[in-house]
Length: 227
Image (tube, rainbow, N blue to C red; front, side, top):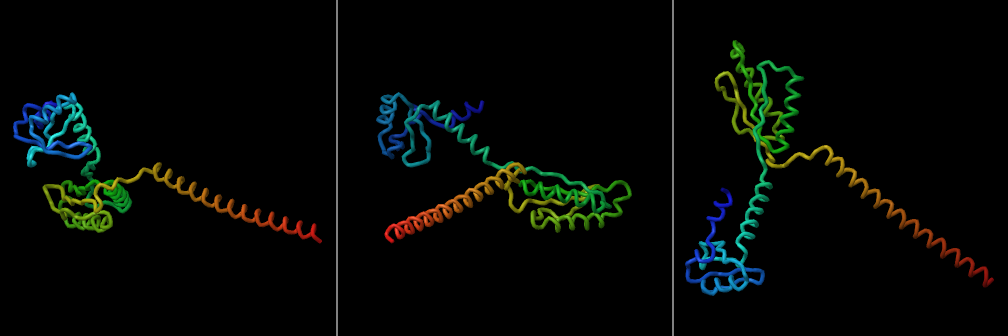
């Protein structure tokens, strides 16, 4: 289905009915009559593929159409892989959350934001606890303040039914947090380079001292022989 959709995006060979086209390739580009471009494609055993129909004249390539579609599909897949997937992570509080639970959830929120995700924090009011909605608002504002270094507020605390929501977005969206293993590997690599540098410098110094010592010994021997 996707391949059929992609095929319909481009005009090929006899489907190209303009008077002339611009052929682009590794050696540059040239404007030629469309009939001549079709002859060139047949001689090379490839297709005439229109890649930019809105240009004046339209831009085409001489390439095997199946290969061209494969390249386009591969490029689209690579672009999609480079896009950062942003998720919305939820953090739930009660209106009377203790400091230990608060700090635990604050830590998780920092991790979510560092990974480039958004955070939706909310206070759930169960039964008569709705009477403490001001306390819930204060808690969420404190939460936003403690995350000021990591996030910007997209929506201030707002009550919706039995829940009061706060929306936060990362200040540096899409910066993925490195795994501990990756950080350890990078640290070891830096340490190894530093050790190698120090050993190289020590070796150079040692070689220099050895050369000086050898030169001094040779000079002393010459003086003794002459004396």
